[in-house]
Length: 364
Ligand code: GN1
Ligand code: MG
Image 1 (tube, rainbow, N blue to C red):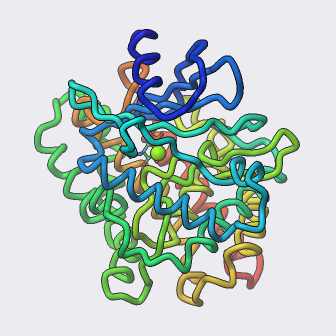
Image 2: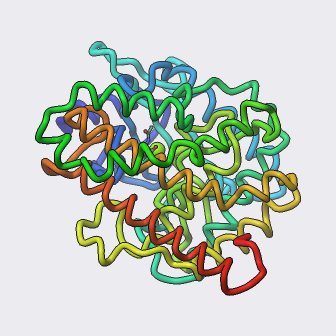
């Protein structure tokens, strides 16, 4: 994207700032994200939302604005300056619309950049795990009184395993023989797991586990921390929609407890860190525990297992589909991501079994 085009789009939004420069933030797999630096602070985050993936962008933006408004109300004891660091603030266009739709059909959304903050792709100390737990736990707690029916399903069946299995099975039918061969060992494994992996979905569908507002992309890089490592703000609320708590708990653990990055190729480096699990759980329960029912609590560990599996099957499916969904940086990127998640799943299961043998405590 050319800088002049970005500057033009930036100036269609409602602000009094002068554009200075922009930097692409390339950590996301779906949208195009730019940090816009202006002559005076605050800076801004300008995003092109991928409308191939998100079919109803106006609905998506409406979801996130509703959630930010709700969080602001719940945190109204904070000063305006504090609120700007704790809750995403979206900027409307000069035409009073919550996004800009360009002539190529691209949707643009803008928010104020939260300065003096940092993110982690991987975690290297317990404090971050604990603070991350508090932050995501608080997000769930503060949104627990928001009626989830007011939100659209931004990606229907996003975390439904049966849907992910049917996409996987479709991919198997069309995949090239060379990709099938490279994925062979994992394909067999995926097929063997169906029963256990469907369990949470059945509990959701039977109504035993209630729908609530969930974030649905709680990887640790979607948590902002202050310079002194305190949890500040949950970001990337594109996938906020009705869901179950287990996947939010699971996705955070999936990324926090992996001793390596999600796409690390050397699988010896990929292990499940149990002490980070404990730290995250502690922070999470401190903040969200009161809003969780016994059945929600009981199945949190299965949420971890299921969420790691969901990411593994999604990466594997995209590899079989010749990389149509996720951005990739090299040819076997998706296969490596999938292998990484399968290794993490194995390591998680070993830790879980050891814990059960070693003591009478349940994993939770
Ligand atoms: C995608 O684009 P990003 O990085 O926010 C994906 C998530 C995955 C994540 C894996 C809409 O999120 O579900 O967990 O990659 N988002 C979508 O890193 O598919
Ligand atoms: Mg996301």
